[in-house]
Image (tube, rainbow, N blue to C red; front, side):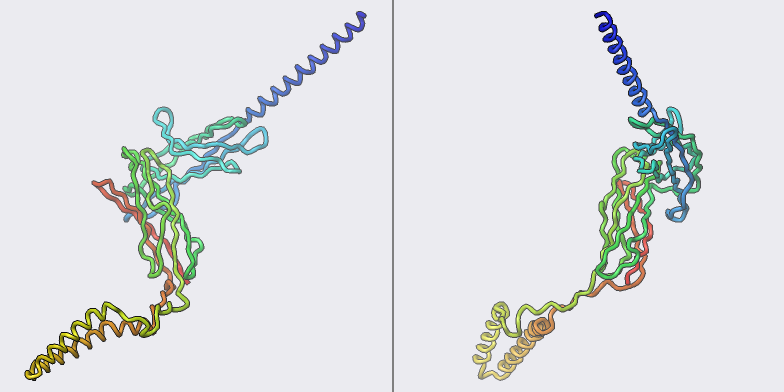
Length: 338
């Protein structure tokens, strides 16, 4: 009996030890899965010069890359760009990492030497990390509240009746947004399109909030029109319908002149004058009513022409006004129509 009890105790001890070891292993694995370290690297350099009045504008482009060390995998979550350090640090913007662990930013930075860092917030699997500071010097830019840029038109060449799309980006300056106490609205418009063409923006009014540094976009659509293949047929055939309004004006005048001519049988000069006025009235009615009616009933309206072919430079403009001051900035978009 004692042997049986001893064997039972051993089995219970072995079973408890196995459960304890399994729980410990799972805990270690779970802790390891939630403790994958990451390394955040930041590449930042001044971008291409954009047009602003007669001076040059420098835009800083930053390419943020998050790489995982230790265990294979691609992190997800939010990464932010910070300018400066400590209590003076300013967060310029944040974005979600893509499927490759990258995020790209486009900033308008003021004239100064900026110290930029990328901060990865981490998630349940990957630990957060911060990149080393990168120095970017911005100088010789124009004094402008915002800059308007556009992507190339897609497709690059349009045929009449086809539409093309471009992305309009409006990037505010730090000086402009730091002075805002309420949201500012900038209205987009275009000019320079040929006849039978138009543009539309979605949205047409872009909102900039205080402290915002990132650019905002709008979708621009260029609409062209094809020629009508046939003329519109006339509404009625010639002589099919009489106009009661014309008879309302014509008959009283005819009867009145006829009565005047009859009453003036003994006055030849009055009779001749009455006949002359009658002929003039009939001629006037014929030239003002009969000819347009004849042309419409026999020829119909002229068909709409197509958008003329050619290469056009379209001016895309953003306009801001707060009731006291106003500012307008523009950029050019090339539109080619076959």
